[in-house]
Image (cartoon, rainbow, N blue to C red; front, side, top):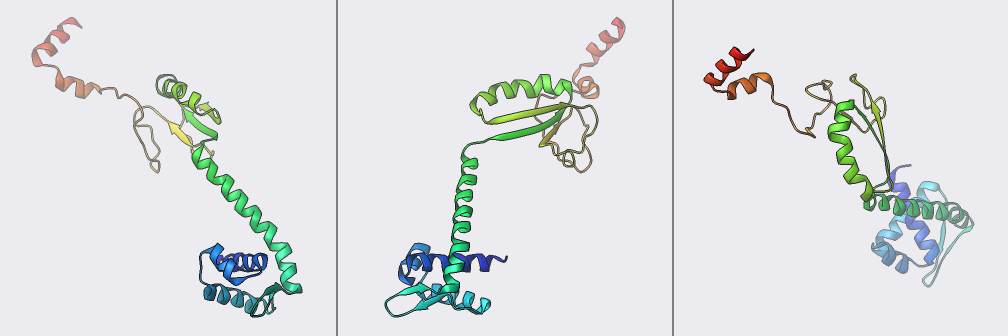
Length: 186
């Protein structure tokens, strides 16, 4: 259903419940004229008169009463569920699925999770130890943690732990005299 139809239904339900364009317009934060045009457009699309209007009152017709009985509870359910969903934003909950190497789990993930999880009791973490390149999207993981440069070409890598220097970069930092001593010892 296109958004305009949903908005039109919401407008109709507001007018039918309030039995007044003035009160419904105030509740919805729109002008009476805009609300009247919206309801009239819905009636024209349906080919039915939904409201009987007089200068002093508004009442649903038989078709309008039927639509009100069908639509109002469902729109209320949608509003209730939308409010419940917004609570998720304020209070993290659910399961986070992570695939990782054993070393990444022990050295980076587990220490971080031990600090984080007590503050979020509704968050559950499922960790799968895997040494391959798992397709985290196809397998429905939220994250994959790998060591070094092991990242599939279409994945985004973000450093989450300490880095280890490569042998070549260590060699550049060692003075030539120290390099000579190291060679003699080996």
